[in-house]
Amino acid sequence: EETVFVVVLYRGQQVMRHYDLAKQEVEAVSELIEAIRFWSHHTLPIALDAPCTVPLVAAGSNFLERFQEHLGTIDQLLGRSRPYKQAAQDADLTSPGTAASGKTPVSASYVALAREWRGRLVGMENNFMRFLRCQEAWLQMSPLLHCHAPPVGPSGAALQRADREFRDLAAELAFRALLQPCLEEVLSGDRLAEIQTLLDAARQQLTESLNDMRAKCFRLFFVEDDLLLRLWGYSALRDLSEQQTVINACIPKLFPGWQSLLLSRRRRGCTELAAVA
Image 1 (cartoon, helix red, strand yellow):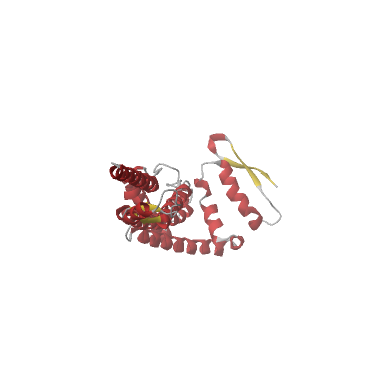
Image 2 (cartoon, one colour; image 1 turned 120 degrees about the horizontal axis):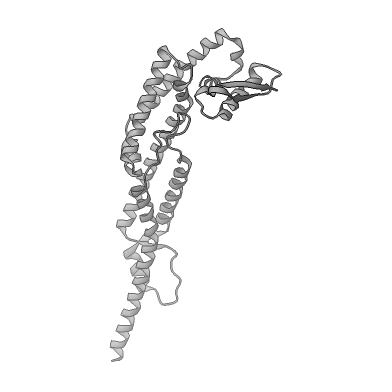
C-alpha cells in the first residue's frame, strides 16, 4: 500500500510539473500567435481619394514600430526557448523546490513557426520600407500634375507615367486590403523597383526642366531642387497656410532683405498678396 501511494504521489507531481511546462509554453507562444493574427487580420489603411499632397498610406511609422515590436517578441521567444522534450525530462529529474533553468519550453513545431514567421516579417518590413520610399518620391512630384502650370514634354510624360503606375499599385493594395497579402504578395517582386525607376527618371527630367527655368531666371539658382519643385507645385496645395509656408521658404533666397509675405484669399477664391515683411 505504501508503494502504491508513493507511485501515485510521484505521478501526481509529475503531471503537475508537465502541466506547468505546458502552461509556460502556451504563454510564450500566445504572443507569437497574436503577432501572426495582427498581420493576417488587420487591413492596410489606404486613402485613394486623398489630395495629391497627402500620403496614400499615412500609418507608416506605426507599422514600422509594430514590425520592431513583433520581431523583438520572436527573438525573445527563440532566445528563451529549449526543446519541450528535454524540459520535461529535466523536470522529472528535478527535485521539488529546485530552481528552474530560466528558459521556457517550446515544442519544435512552434520554434520552426517562430523562425519562419521571423523571416516573413523581415521580408514584409523590407517591402513596406521600399513602398514608403516610393511614396516619398511620389509625394514630392505629384503636386506638379495638379498645379496651374504642370510640366509638359518629356518631363510631363515621365511624371504622368510614374504617377499612373504608383496609383495603380495603391489601388491593388486597397483591393487586397489585408496586411499580409499586401506586404508579402503585392509589394514583392520587381514591381516596386520598376516604379522607383520610373520615379527616378521623372525626377531627372524635372531637374532638367528646373535648370531651364534657372537659365531664364538667375535668382532661381539660389533655391535648391527640392524647394524649387515645391514652389512649382505650390498652387496644388488646398490650404492657404501651406502655400504661404512654401513661398516664405523661398522668399529670403530669391529676394535678400525680405523675410516673408502674407497671402489672403478674397473674391472668387483668388489668392492675393496682402503684406510683405
